[in-house]
Image (cartoon, rainbow, N blue to C red):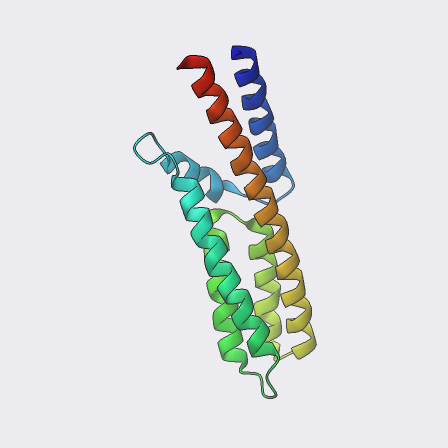
Amino acid sequence: MAARVMQLQKRLTDYVSSLLQEGFLDDHYQQILELQDESNPNFVEEVVTLFFQDAERLLNELETALCQQRIDFKMVDAYVHQLKGSSSSIGAQRVQNVCIGFRNYCNEQNVEGCRKSLQQITEEYTLVKNKLETLFKMEQQLLAAIRSTYM
């Protein structure tokens, strides 16, 4: 059974490495991972879940704002700035990178660029959310295997 734990640990480590290499996550994710310990074993998942909630709210706000007859680009930029900050805080690098371009379109008051950026952010957000949910499932499998092996 210890071999199973080692196998799951390797899969998890390889998966996190691939997320870092593919730019889904950056060093900020590693930093919040270091804050997790035995006294708060679900810290990363809790922080990321808050990011999911915040990002989905902001994406909805952006969708609504970009559908208005007269677009308030300052408000759109404020939403994108918030999304950039929250994605940066968990290390969602690809979401953060699209936000940078999005903000440039806001400054130019480029409606089409903003709408394309919203589509890109939504796609990148969905990808990183799915990747992180897979990561959390892998962690749960590892913990279950550890419990059944060593307890």
